[in-house]
Structures are given as C-alpha cells and as structure tokens.
Length: 130
Ligand SMILES: [Zn+2]
Image 1: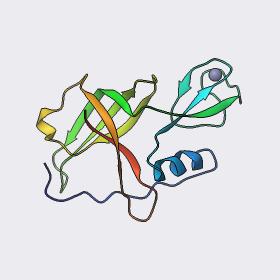
Image 2: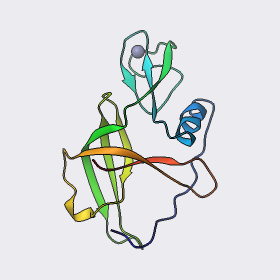
Image 3: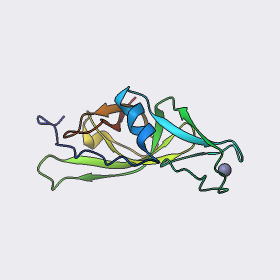
Image 4: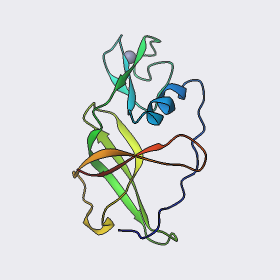
C-alpha cells in the first residue's frame, strides 16, 4: 500500500456532468440510463450515445463492478493503477484502482467504488478490491 496519497486534480464539471459530480459529493455513483433504448451509458451525456434519444435519466449505480483491463504506472512518483472497470449496470468507466497492493490486481477482479478527495473539487469515483 502506498504510504502517501497521490494528489488528484479536481474534475471540471459541465452542464452534462454537474449532477454526476453533485452525486459524487454525496457519495453516490450516478450513471445515465436511456428510457428509449433501456441501456445505461457512461460518461454522462444529454443524448443517449446508443440511440441519440434525449430521454435519459440519472440512476444510482450499486458501485460494484469488475476490472476489464488495467495498467500500473510504476514510474510515477507514487505508483498508481489506471483501469477500465465495468459496472454491474453494464457501463465501463476509465478510473483508478486504489487502496490495495497493485501487484495483486488481475483482470476480472471484483471491485467496489470509493470516492477520493481532489484538489479543490468534488471527490472522484475510484475503485478498490471488493
Ligand atoms: Zn438510448
């Protein structure tokens, strides 16, 4: 486990993602689901990327998923892992895996969301082994 926490840059919210970051501030991981085609998508957008409907709504995700792919950045001052995590809701997020021994990560591993503070912005969702 890393002795020091890596400094995380504050995310930039825009009108399409403001609700997502407001949710993160409350500890909720939100994804958008389309009422027209029924599919969830990420990142949040006003129009469904699958069918272009504007009938999308926010949904609280359960916060659990599996590692689809990952890469450990060992040459950084504080090593870290970036990963694609597929949520149980079916969407895949580009994120970080944190609070664990980076040598034990594997594809297909179950993870759950944790929110990490940023430098002056809302917390960002990252994942840790479940
Ligand atoms: Zn759709």
